[in-house]
Amino acid sequence: MIWLPLGFFLTALLYASVGFGGGSTYSALLTLVGFDYLLLPLVSLACNVVVVTGSTLRFARGGTVPWRRALILSLIAAPLAFLGGLTPIKQHAFLIVLGLSLVGAGLALLLPRSPGGTGDPLPAARFMTFAAAPLGYLAGLVGIGGGIFLAPLLHLTRWAQAREIAATTSLFILINSLAGLAGQLAKNGPDRFAEAMTGALPLLIAVVLGGQLGSVLVLRFLPERVIRWLTAALTVWAGSRLLLT
Image (cartoon, rainbow, N blue to C red):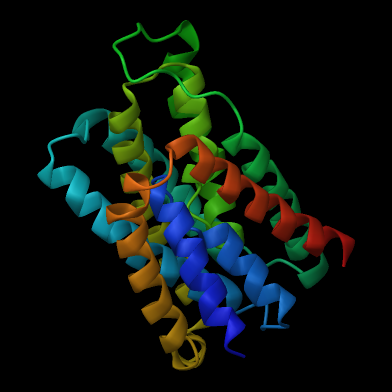
């Protein structure tokens, strides 16, 4: 099934170019090919970690991570991501939550972004810490990083400059993906994790290549707005397919 690694490659390319990991769409693609839904978050979160680790390191080297504020958001969400990973969920409910999450995430990508200048944060920016907890739980439950929801909220409230928001989102996804993965591992056991990873090596290689290309090259050729539109279209399509199926 060669189209699946290709789909993971394109997803990683698009998502990495806008600072995300792509876990939501990895989950949708795996669901559409009939992958065991209990193992699905393990693969998606592992791919997430692979993609955003490189992005987080690049942001850290570039000095664009607002460490204190970014860590507050991430560390509030992480315990809830672990709890979400531990939570048992029936397949039907899982697919509905995942489909709705994808459609919501795609629409969130279309929300306007704040300019890269130094506009003052809106009053709502102080409440972003309260948004971190439910996003963390959702991340662990369905195998996503949660940053695809967090970033539009940070932009809308002018929480920080655009590059700082991208860096914060990348760190948020990395920490929550690791916490969610730990919860999934505790729930399913190491044997199930080994089973999930056995067939996932081509997918992991695909996201490594796609993530590197997306974060380094794509923005040199396509405007960030066009990439967001393409990513939103892919995400809404995948979520709609799940809900309709």
